Length: 567
Image (cartoon, rainbow, N blue to C red):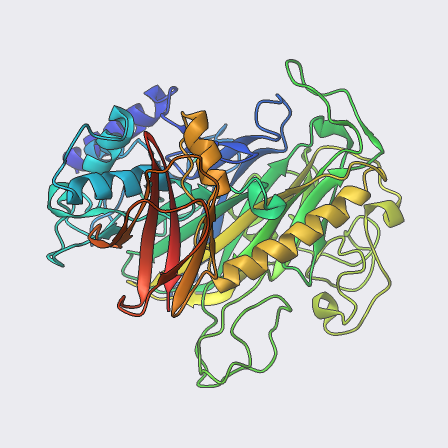
């Protein structure tokens, strides 16, 4: 008992002293987003370098009941009353310690270009200087592939399939997007000071990532989030919901409206009037034609198995329904609620049951959300607040269609809103893994006022979801430091991609000594072409096996690398 108390005191002391928690910025596209190792995203500066912000804070909420009907819940807002999540993994008994928390109080940031350059340099026999900087090199060498408890952690390419990460033997990190930040956190590092709920025993492996695609406005204005959630407890969590909470402040926090798009599986914030003004000290307003910021539920947890291929979803935005495959259905955004920054029954949660009520469809006084007005005791029970015209079939009102409802129709006064969307319910078995994905999509119109930006955001959401469902292979590897490399990369195109028999490359170059090398996913050189002429060139792929390849174009001291798939 004494040892246990000392351990808890050590963990508490670490958290209290941890005012300067390490974080890193995603910043390879139009959004600069701050990422923290305890599962917290914030300060989405959009456009990057503008000192204007959309998402102030965002994090996960997860809750359910054990076999004795005890509420188990973890969630975070601003960590003002304590914490529910701590950095680091858990062991097989769902335990951690102060040393592990301190060790993993970190984030690991990498660009795909650095990984590509490293693997090519390594597989060339390390001829010439290392092409990547010391920070990226240190991250690659110290990639947290296996936890301190000997369990799999950050994904990596295992060249000899021995389960041991050895970057000098051909292993390398695997990331999503063109730039990614990996971190791991848990809900069993101490007492839940934020929600006051009982710990579950969750380990959450997170990868937040972006694509660098200046010519693709949807990807260039999106942050993606992937969470692999492991139930390391010994009990089944019933009636489980997973929520994405956000405080979206569009420049000024005091004049916002909030809504949801049922068909698109998203919730969003938009300005409540046509001009965004009066932002917090030190920040700038968006002014005229203020933007809209959406949070999209791309892929949810698996629906509980029933031995059927369900033909229609309980939510209209789930996936894998009616595909002739049994029990592969994934839940979509099942609920959405707003709440105010106050202490009323429709305001900030303060107890564990408040957090869970918001996840499942109730207000703090346990009454269900209702359709119309403010959503409190105003009409029929509903699952989605302020859906506008996005639920014509009445998915959120027991399949009884209702007239359109949003904050403008309700006659609400713009204010500081918080939003929470959730997946659920589902049964979370001990030892099982649920992998979920979100996208934070930004849209801004150049004219038409505040509502026009919602349309731009919706168009980008459609594009992002389509690309996500089809698989996104990345947007190329421009140098982040050299303008010449950037220009040659922008001139290089590959099509079709994916390809089967041939690919065509097109580039602009004034050099007569341009070469093209193709490497497979292990970094092995499989094709070499010298003295390639500027313009279109067709390359035969018949001798290559199906898979991912890197095409490197070298022009003197400048180079560009793009990826393609042979299928």
